[in-house]
Image (cartoon, rainbow, N blue to C red):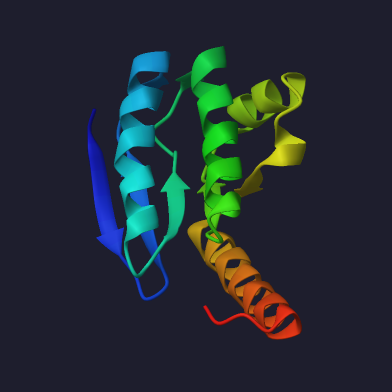
Amino acid sequence: MKVKIDTKEKFYAITLMEPILSANIAADLSQLVTKFLQQKIKNVVLKLSALETIEDKGAEELAQLQQLFYENNASFVVCELSRTLEDRLEEMELMEVMNITPTESEAWDIVQMEEIERELLDEETGEES
């Protein structure tokens, strides 16, 4: 699996440089990104501009990653998907459960908003981050 990882202030920008997101590549990707949940910076923005095809298992893995990150008070945002792949995720009814944005800039906006939401929720419940 070929990826490029850029560390930003509040997230890791991971660019998948593969044309197909198969079940095997999705499993490898999952192993890679779940390690970030143990880091100080937990949020991940996954850039999929090189992706041409997504297998059902690969798409399901992305949706599961989204859920895992939220359960661990972290953001997982997918960006730069082609219209064809967005349509495929829509058919699979996964668009509604995933954070998908057209650009990395918009993904960054979502990460920032979710960080603020988590801080406000922590204050309401009296917890410390």
